[in-house]
Length: 206
Image (cartoon, rainbow, N blue to C red; front, side, top):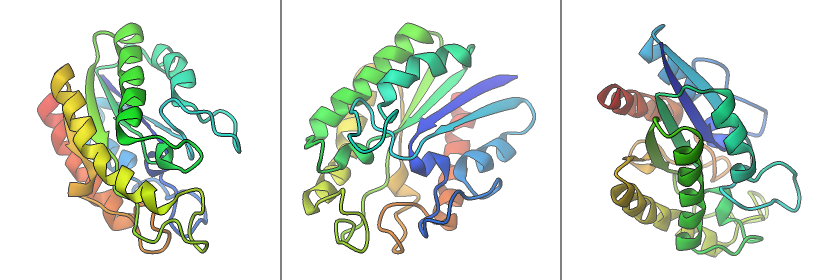
């Protein structure tokens, strides 16, 4: 059996845009990946709402991905593939992080992969863009108008990192986009499209 770890934030967790909780099994993209791959694969869903690459959230504890990632890597070894899709929460105003700084956060996580699971292949996914209204009061005031541009720029930064490190890369925005309901999370169609895209990529990798 091949083991795959999906490490991400609320769009890996499967948080619904209408803020009523989590999409059920068979809807969120990680579960679609599991079903498409079949019984010879074990897919570990490690999505957490609010998770960042390296930043401590002043409003919620335990969101710094780099602090929990080593233990997660160790507890699920051996891993054939590690999938990372993070960066959206790093765009929040409180962190004031430029795209390149968020890229440094991703590189911190990739260094942890090399240290704690050196034989694993890695697929880096740049997250979907934030919606152009996300910062408005009726959506999510933790973001600003500038956050939108940062979220768009992440794919360029991530692609460069993937190329330099010789790891696999996928742009989530090519297959999904944020829901108009909350300007931040994927709807069911987005989860389905991304799940299928990741499945095709995983089959090529493994």
